[in-house]
Amino acid sequence: MDNGASSYRRFRDNGDESGLVEIIRDYKDGLILYLASIVGNIRTAEELAEDTFVLLGTKKPRDKGKGSFRTWLYTIGRNVAIDHIRKYRKNSEVSIDDIELVSEEESVEAAYIRQERKIIVHRAMRKLSPEYRQVLWLVYFEELSNKEAAGIMKKSVRSVESLLYRAKKSLRSQLEMEGFDYEKL
Figure 1 (tube, rainbow, N blue to C red):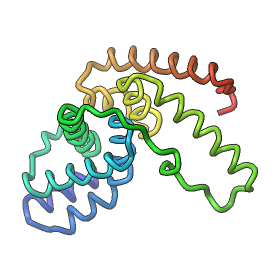
Figure 2: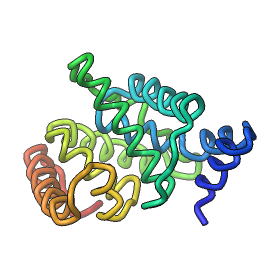
Figure 3: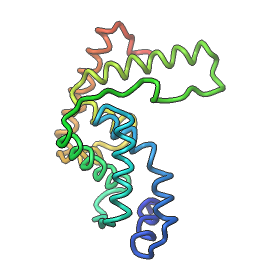
Figure 4: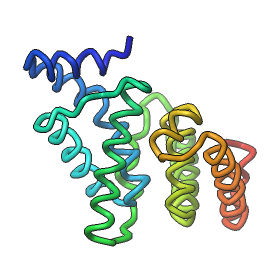
């Protein structure tokens, strides 16, 4: 059973606010990073994630149970992001400084090289179309299945597979232009 779904049911049906707190704790970071891949700005993504959780807390929509709770939550977040884009029509970029902190166990040199690779990959991803960024983010960073990504993006599984193929090809091309050896990833 999906832990998020049971927490949400506790909140929605019984008014148990700890259920909503658990959802926010468990899904906040992933949702923010996913939304950042859509809107291109980490600060805006944080606000949109907050709006998504406010929507859950106030309107208490029903989960139709067709997929996992995370897929349903990310679909709501995607819709909030699309509404935001339609309203503001801005193309901001994610600050590389906001992406991830380095583990203390790594050597300084290895951490530096790893961080440089991430910067190059994120730079290359920013040059891709929003649809390519979104499918790559869902499948590779969020580790969702093609079916779950298709549900979030409101596309067929076949079109997500095709989109993913083209997105990987485009990313590889961008990385090659930057002189990055993607085989070492």
